[in-house]
Length: 147
Length: 106
Image (cartoon, rainbow over all chains, first blue to last red; front, side, top):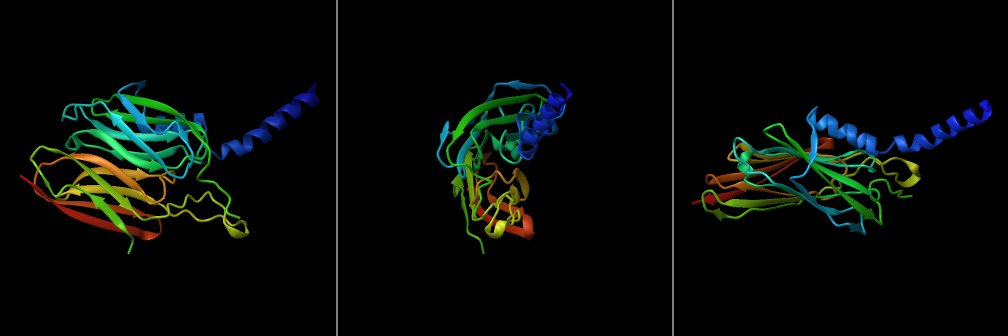
């Protein structure tokens, strides 16, 4: 039994080592925590638009839209985007002000694998809203070998 | 000099919502890729993008290596006063690029 247990522990360690070098759902959750602090993250108010099927992970158009009046009293202060399987969980963090009028940010990102992308918005009232999207990537970005 | 393209309306009505777009030429090398002879290609990215309207910051964004090469950003602003909208990118290896456009608000 001891031999089998030792083998299983060893096998688990070996299989986990390469994974640790990439973002994981756990690392993504930790990164979200780090960005928004202790506030409860609730689903809603955020719309994350990106194609569900991506042929080239090197340039993926992404738009985050947050339902917010953008007034002095109630506006979006930050929009963050995270991913599960790129080398790092962060994608970007944008800072907004009431003067933006509309809480919309669009950019193009890289995705290394089929995975879940999450957008998180912080508001001036201390609320945190989020939305996720599952995407399939056929050509991966970020880590390709050029040799 | 790197190529920078920004798109903003030349004129706007006071209080009008305008869309601002900015595109810059940059490799956004992630630092996770391996090049010839198995050597890692060093990271070279833009780390920060800021936009100011007459000197006051209206929008900023922190990039990670997961932003695609030749970063594109679009966002909105309420036209409050005539003046200059300035875009600035800073990053690894001392990278700095700036571009400003004039806007007339009636």
